[in-house]
Each structure stands twice: as C-alpha cells, then as structure tokens.
Image 1 (cartoon, rainbow, N blue to C red):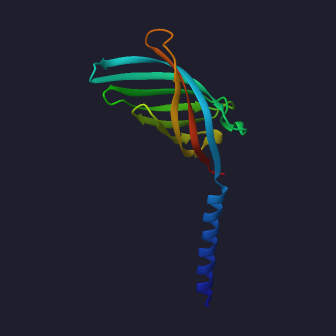
Image 2: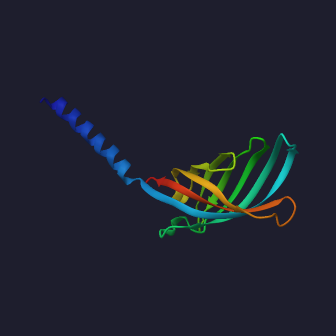
Length: 163
C-alpha cells in the first residue's frame, strides 16, 4: 500500500470512529410523566359543524420513573383547537426545568385520542434536545369558572441530548 492509500485509509477510519463516538455520546432520556395544567379558552367561532378556539394554559410535570430528570418542569403553552365534527389541536409549549433552563416543543392531536409532541430546541442543559413523545389526556374536570379548563394527562417517549 502506498503512502497516499494509507493516509486515505487512516482518514476514513478516523472519520468512522468520530461518527460512531458522536452517536454513542448522545444521551437518551426516557420520558414518562404525568402533567396537569389549567388554562383559558377564547372562542373564535362556534357552531355544531365547526368551532375554533384559541387556548393558553400553564402547568407542571411529575416524573413516573425513578430518574427524576423531568420532574417539576413547569410549562406554558398556546394552541389553536378545532371543534365540531372533526376535532384537532396544534400548539407550542415552553418548558422550564427546576434549574431554570428551558426547551420548546410542538404538539398536535387529531380527534380525542393520543397526540404527539416533538422537541424543537433548548437552551442551557437542554441545548440540542430532540425527541418525540406520545401523550393523552387522562382526566378533564368541570371548568372552575367560565372560559377555563383544567386537565391532566400522561406523556411517554424519548428525548435525546448530545453529549
């Protein structure tokens, strides 16, 4: 093997190790928590066939696993909900961990079953956060006052942080 071939082979090998190390160094974070929130709804239009509502809510998470990394995260969300014959909602949330660092997610749901949320960005310890969560509402109470709602649910999935 000539010198150029050895150098090329060495570079390819080192590149492969660097890629493998980057993959191994990413930290998987299991997501399994309960969330509860309260919010307000502003009706844009409402009929039997079609309804459109702007929603803003705030809440907190409780981890369901021993690793309490996602415990006591507070959040603030805004969304647009479609009602009537075909229900759906789509929104964005800012989460803040107890240390003050935060991250953002986008969520959506069609119908009344499970929805998804996707990690979009983060700062501080959450910089580079990616991942997906399946969520569902487990209980929703009678509104404590007109134009409000209170609900709890669960979210399960996986986040990933670069090391």
